[in-house]
Image 1 (cartoon, rainbow, N blue to C red):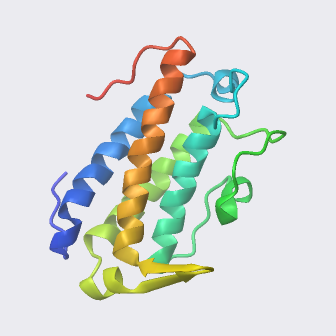
Image 2 (cartoon, rainbow, N blue to C red; image 1 turned 180 degrees about the vertical axis):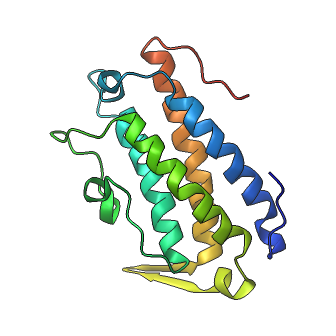
Length: 164
């Protein structure tokens, strides 16, 4: 996929965004929905939470650029909710469907983001930062969460994630 962003600052981030788009699907590939909710007697976030939170963040990032879209599992993740011990999380197939829905929409917003949009300061209780920093953090976080899913794959006895 060719990447010619309006803002030069976005070039490397878009390359990572595209890589994560494929890695996400590879990371969750073949994992049963029962295994996706295993925590192996730890307090670690399970695959279903990690996968859903990644979908949620792509929707939230798209909304920063003026959209009003919601992920199917918005109620489980809105307001940056942590893992809920008693919740039954959606299937990985449902997450993947939502991921594939939001990804091209968000990618278009990122490619066409202007310097003015990227410099806009977001205000949250106790903190503020430009949109560019939020995009940067979210793309960093995607790598982190995909890596956690990759580790869970191995802990649960699945083959390693495929990067090709």
